[in-house]
Length: 284
Image 1: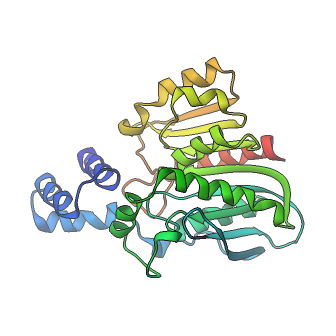
Image 2: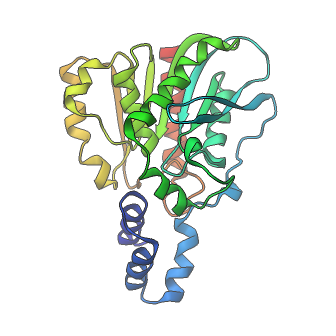
């Protein structure tokens, strides 16, 4: 697919570009309304394909906990056997908790972790289901300080669980990748933080990191990669344990297997295997 189309969709999903403006520009790039409509299904996520990992041999549940501005909700998955496991906070993209992220949580659970995937939008929802456009609009109304507090409260709620062993890590994607980087600067107890194509923290915040950090980037993701060098320099300067990987020829969101145009199976498989190896090293 024309890289200009991928870049346009990335702009639409991350900047205040309206659906109408996006479609107008997509028509210009593809040459006609019909061509634009034929391309659209390959760009947008298809959550009907999201359930890659079944719940067999797993315990799953939905939980709630008090948030800064209302009730938070989260999806939980862990091995079926009830014992204590390291916890992994799984952090979604700027669409809220969805079937794909729940599946990622199950993948972590199958690897032997207590995976918890909070929904950042939970306190703002007024109906059970919303569109991706509605989700992105809600994200613009999130207060950064409340949002951070909500994820930290998820971590604070862990001691009340009988299936947690005291060790904690996180993995985030896109918007969630930025949150994973932020949590690394805010939560000293965090043992490992993995960010997939996430915005980097300010250099002044990096000395606060106590966790080991793993970073995954798509080489074609110019928007996020603009901050990559400065972050790596700060990690090195502060002697933070880190790993950084750049996957050639792939785009932002290459791990999301519900987005046909951007998903790259080879890079996604390699990045996830590196993520699990990283957690194994730092959390088990």
